[in-house]
Length: 325
Picture 1: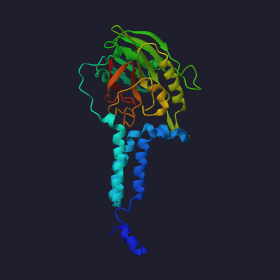
Picture 2: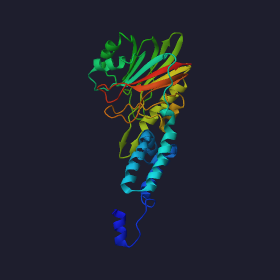
Picture 3: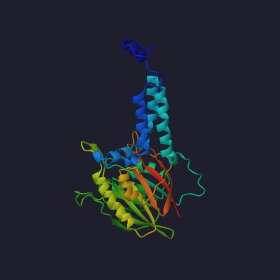
Picture 4: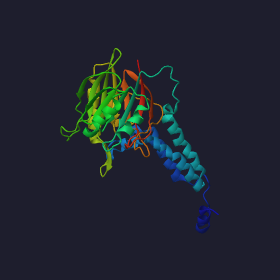
């Protein structure tokens, strides 16, 4: 005898049917579907709720298996039917990312590896071994320290002899680098020691490709909600630098501390685009749930992105294939 039937006997009311039970579960499924389809309308006030939802948007798909399990426990046909709504919404939103990558007709023009190497990572040799296994033409690193810069230069130099660093970011390249300069993307309140963006021009055959290597400020979930103010301010400054760039082909690589679905970094993602297939989650390395390490392009196409095996960092490296137009 079900709990509803026992309750009905004691209360003198008829037991609920499978179509009457689970209304709260059904409402929860519909709410998850609404968030998936209308995430851009979630307000960014109230502790930056919009950014929080958009950062973890793919994980709203968990409403489907959890909803099915709860519906079976509740023996609710209504809840089982309602679960189909977030399932359809998730597939609709993420269908482009579910498409298989087309077979590569030609090798990529440029293979770029981006990695937040972590300023506490003492295993430079092991880290470089992972990065070079992807046969990159360019490696961009964030959280490079004074103590590790020369170690990375020595370990990467045989394969990638050209390099430049600025503050805590750096680039190592198979091709010559020119015009290296700092880009000021300091958030409000940061002093001159905050130095986390580099612009260089990469000479690829006869082409001049501008590369920005950036490490945007971290975000936190605290008493004020999802705290993104410093990151959002730096994003605007980086977007201004990209917009002012005269070279036709521009790459932006780095730890942006943001998922590309987050509307808060739209000033940048309107200028440079990424590969739209797959879910190359890069953070945290122990159990990746979000991609915050990116390679983006203007005047070129990022045709494939994937993560590499774990290093001692708390981020996974990402490797991107870039094709020039």
